[in-house]
Image 1 (cartoon, rainbow, N blue to C red):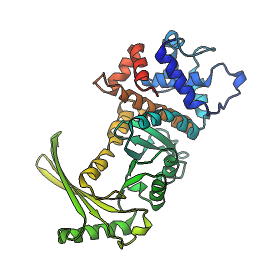
Image 2 (tube, rainbow, N blue to C red):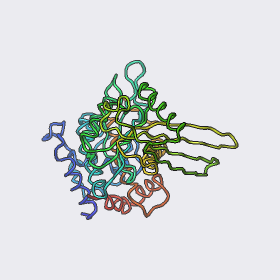
Image 3 (cartoon, one colour):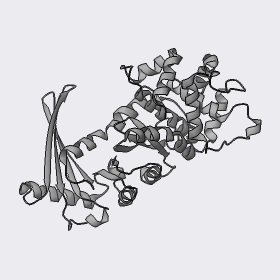
Image 4 (cartoon, helix red, strand yellow):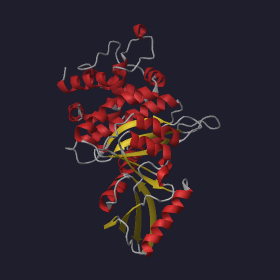
Length: 380
């Protein structure tokens, strides 16, 4: 058995030792661990649906037999579909991402971005809405740390607390867009010993108005007698020039509503000026945080939040074709989506190939030794 393959199987065994098999095990031809292990390898090599996964298994049967049991041969695509459709998606996700959580803990991840994404072809016209998944992403390490599916007729607000429960937040800073700006979510983050930087928009109209007024008054007085910090950066590229000015202003103890937001300490205002082909535009965004007013640090945290869009969501759509595949089984879709997110994380940990995730998937498909190298680099 190849050493990297053996370690891969042992790692998956540790991840999934608590995951119940939904089948009548004595009557099964295919061990659950084989099905999960084969699926992850297939997705890393370019498979996008159940028939693709079966094809990968058939083509790489001899390679897979060096470290998987495969007592019944390669499962059919219907077997993959049925098994993933019956695995509890919350338990499966929690088990799967113990791998990346261990990797993140080993290097000390500091910023965790939380955001939602819809699987656009998971709907059934008139009977089933699109499946929405909320994901936690370690921005510095490019690792998915957890995933929770929104229940039907629900939204991200109810899924975020469930996702936070799966994470170790001690010392980390959680970033979210305005959807996650909720008093209960702030309290949960602080109770779990984490920090927060949350965008404030119209879903919190009273708070947003108070912050705009407070910042406007500070500008008029040039922040006299206020603890204030400012940092400015300018970047040019892709035909545009963007200047970002980050103001961080301490909020007084008597700021209206401060007591409602646990440990609220600082208002952050990011003003962006963009010049694109001679056309100028301005945008101002407001954030709240429990960090003290350090403009450069908070500006970098806010900007790093977009890593989840650029380094995960974009790759899932463009490279993995997530939005182009019809899959109406919500449980199976959620579980396969979790596999994709782990595959993105593992591929991004391999750094000798500089040509991006798409090229790494092709190299994995063509060269089993490179596939094992990716797994070896991401062992825990």
